[in-house]
Amino acid sequence: MWSGGGCWLPVLVRGYLNLWRLHFARTWGGFRGRMAETLSTETQTASELKVRAQQNGDAAGDSKAVQLPGSPEQAGQEVEPAPGNGKQVSGSEEQAPGSREQAPVAAVDPGKRKKRRGAARERVVPPPKKRRAGVSFGDEHFSETSYYFEGGLRKVRPYYFDFRTYCKGRWVGHSLMHVFSKEFRAQPLAYYEAAVRAGRLHLNEEPVQDLSIVLKDNDFLRNTVHRHEPPVTAEPIRVLAENEDMVVVDKPSSIPVHPCGRFRHNTVIFILGKEHQLKELHPLHRLDRLTSGVLMFAKTAAVSERIHEQVRDRQLEKEYVCRVEGEFPSEEVTCKEPILVVSYKVGVCRVDARGKPCETVFQRLSYNGHSSVVRCRPLTGRTHQIRVHLQFLGHPILNDPIYNSVAWGPFRGQGGNIPKTDEELLRDLVAEHQAKQNLDVLDICEGDLSSGLADSTAPSSELGKDHHVGLAASAQKMDGAVEAAPQNLDTVVSAPGKAADTAVGTQETDPLCSECRLMRQDPLPQDLVMFLHALRYKGPSFEYFSPMPAWAQDDWQED
Image 1: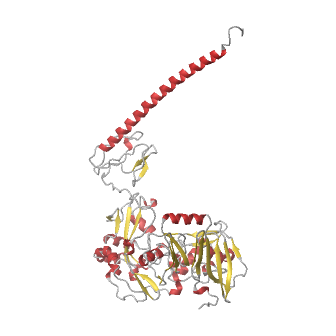
Image 2: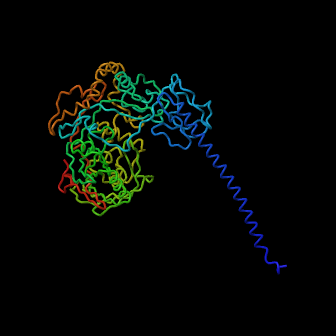
Image 3: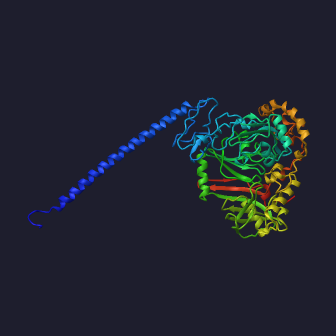
């Protein structure tokens, strides 16, 4: 059978292969044709939708009211899910009164389309404005007010300031009156009612007429207030080094690094900008307000990122010096106790097994019979790490207003022995500093106090509604001063060491301001100093020192 006729198997295989190739070619060709037809149809449909959207745009000329499938979201517009399909559509697709009905979009039920823009009793919220990434301050901010020096303190002349914020999610659906009464209790409702009459409150840049107005998502609030800042030490900020990449300064105690709480102009950022013309700086690390010493700033975002990467990689060495209670051990001590934040608002931490891991190395430098000077090398960067670890070791910083307080109990937190709940601890800390009228040490003000900590005793709460209503009329007459104050105040600057004028001009007083009616006793300059100092910062390509403070000298004695 296999002889004489040759082998027919290869011929049969080639035949089957040819048939398979022919079948595949026909099938693939048909599939490609159907795909091309489908894509052409979808392109035509998308084009038609775009044309219809442009034809049906609102009176403001919004030709992008409909967002095509797959197109990017419109910059600066609110985006929310469309009913029923879970897709994202532009929040600006509402229509102006009188415009033609918008062509329906696939997968959206026409019966569930959003109300047309401007419908009866429907308040329209403009889309949020784009904001620059990061925070920067320029001459327009620096000229809001000026400094004067008195009794060894740097003071800021009172000035008008706009607090601005977009509506928080938890505020949506609530009235302004509800929000003010629940979350802004620094003033009574009578104050905010008077502020409405004086034109101080704005919603989406329109004066608020009634506090009963209900807030919507993306509402923009602006509240003009008469602002007072706490004094800080008059000690100057000395520049230790400056090059094309960095600025390094010796920060005095009591001055915050950047605006926070009640501080704005009495901060390192503003003082450097106003007195040293050093602007657009990027802080490379943080120092507590009461901590002094080496503080580094980058001049560009690129340098800032490079240094922060070194910090993340543990390439930055930090060395502090402090004066603590009692005789610190002569041998080197390493503390690895984890630290837990008790309250972010009050700024209090403690040692707790649930906290974040951290490590600090301590070495005594001297002992004067009552207190010790200790060198501290934090190997991690937790909030209040040095202060909390020293408290745990039984040697708190000599004049630490938080961690060397009787509010921690008879052991003052030594060994983690705190016979109080966190709520009781916070309550007692706040009460102690409230009695001393130095709540700024806790970086809070009277209005920040919730019922869970202590009762707010802001003097303004004692003023009744009738009193505020009576002030509203005179406040309305000061509308020009609200706008003019920041420009006019920068011409009034006292030289360092010169006492401030006793007569306060109308630009520095405000009939609605409770602070203007208070007589606060100034702190002594030495009361603004805590014995903790950043002595040295070293990186792969830099090393900066600050001078040893007077309280760290071997022969220093307490008063």
